[in-house]
Image 1: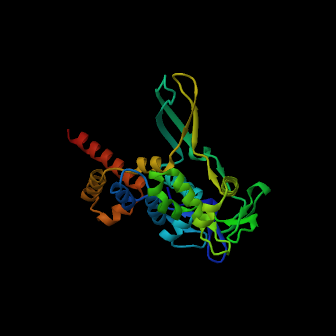
Image 2: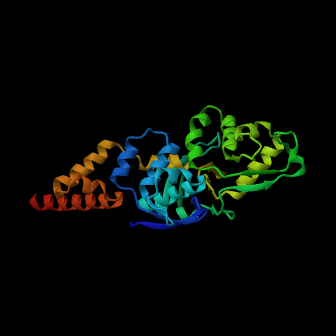
Image 3: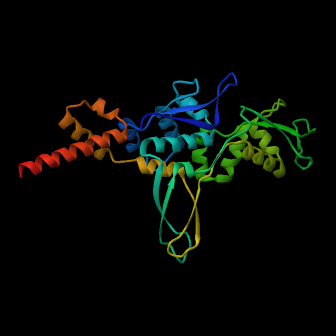
Amino acid sequence: MDQMICWLPGGYIDGEGNVHREAEIAPLCGRDEELLAGSRRQASASLVTAILSRCVKRIGAVAPVTPDVARALLVADRQYLLLKLREATFGPRVLAGLSCPWPDCGKKVDIDFRMSDIPVRESEARSLVHALELSAGAIYAGADGAPRRDISFRLPNGDDQERLAPMLLENEAEALAALLARCIVPNGDGRSGEEIVGSLPPMTRFEIEEAMRRLAPEIELTMETDCPECGREVAVPFDLQDFFFGELRISRDLLYREIHYLAYHYHWSEREIMEMPRAKRRSYIEILADEIEKYNDALY
């Protein structure tokens, strides 16, 4: 597949406040697969940043898409770009297998869907900073002790994911508190985001987190189907990063064997082969294998 054009559900906001939503994506090539083959098995936010900065050619008028730009994208925009990158590389159809989560069943369940079936909710409020007026029950104390009902925040992005990933593995509650602290915009009373969050009542935190959820774009990543064995409904969280990288990660040995195979028969350079999209490289391998089989059949 050639390069794909898509529209981000949120959008990249530059330093002047301009929103860029049209993204141009190139399918994975051999160099990208080499990066994946050498990565740790578990998907990471930093790996998402690396792949997006390599395969997203532009976002609106922003080009190239540097790692800093990829980190500044909202979480849902990064997820959406992974979905479209998967579609550009493999096509729109997805076949996956999982185990029925009901304890008395546990049989394998096949899921067959198209990328367009995944619900995407766009953000209606596109700005770097969002102001929120809290309810009377969520009033909090400022640095001077005076009651405050106003607070400002930004939405979580890729940089937050990268920085908080180690903490999330150790203590999810602390990671969520740290995320809120990073997203709170200091209100001018001299306190940092961490200090503000540390002083917030539970109701205040709840209202801020709900506002963030409401304003952020969202990719629905819960797959629903019926188990063919027990007939009950199965709803399973769909880990996009693990699915994406698990599907694409191949061994270096296989990748290099494919390169050797094409280079040996076509006399192309490693650079030429590695820069081919994955689908194009595989097509040449299939054609070449068919021609070699025909040649051998003619001889014998």
